[in-house]
Image (cartoon, rainbow, N blue to C red; front, side, top):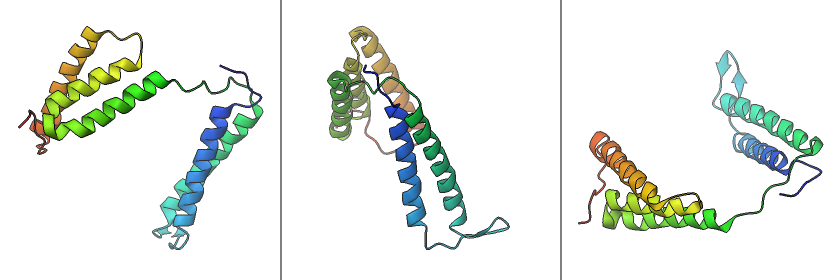
Length: 149
């Protein structure tokens, strides 16, 4: 990690919050605001956006005046493992079924860290797959295939 004159994480987070708040204020500019006793459709979005903007300005200011360690460089291993996990699940869930696709996705995601052990990942994947089938298919009744057709 590199040392920086500014806390880049706080600064970027604050600027993100300010941008979201500004976008909300622009998007709701034509809505009637009203007042606290008689709220219009634009009242709550504007109140929340202004509060969000306040937090964003706070974090941006804190990022500018506080020295912290800079953002660590991007690590490719976790990034690629998680992207592969999500992509494989999205492409195989319908064809292989929820049970198998979720096991494969969890095992692929376990490669994001060097500390993971394959046996632990397999056991966790099976337990998580069973929980997903119970929740989504049995309890919620979603029409998701459990096994390959």
